[in-house]
Length: 258
Image (cartoon, rainbow, N blue to C red):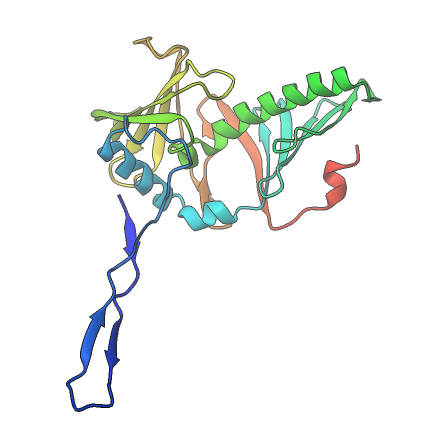
């Protein structure tokens, strides 16, 4: 696990007497460079798996770059475009085939603004229904893009399995990622492949149930590009996340107007 320490400071105190100065040495303060989210299952996670998760974070640009990410948008497999204000929690979902449906919600406050079939929804039940739909879409689509930054999320457990070859014959560490009553599908399990040379995720295998031994599918994570200091990839083999854009700011109207 990576840490950085504050430099030890030596202070010389001189008294009014002729006594020799004394050294007062402060103990080094250790601070984790990639702290886990509150509720991360550190007790049941492997130290080696945690160290690799930290190395992945560093290889993808580092924790500061991830924390400093402000606004990002992307197209998910051609089906929809998401715009996410990571700082304020606003999410807008547009559907390229039609501008008659727009979902806007805030993942912190759960307040929503919804347009369905060209008509703005105002009934509380409809706002709740489509707001929850928007959050579910965001959870899924953001995970497909940002999973490597979320290996130490709340209520996740990381296990180190072994070294094996990913697609293409690349030697990779394999981490097992499971969940404890969090998200829309807490029974899921992932095997996350991390290139032993670059320490970048190069593949994941998805299991619908944590007890499954055969994955439902396996897809690559290839062709990383630099986006404002973060390395991101949208290449998932037969499918792709496209139009990835990182911004420092965005007009408030994006999340208030259709």
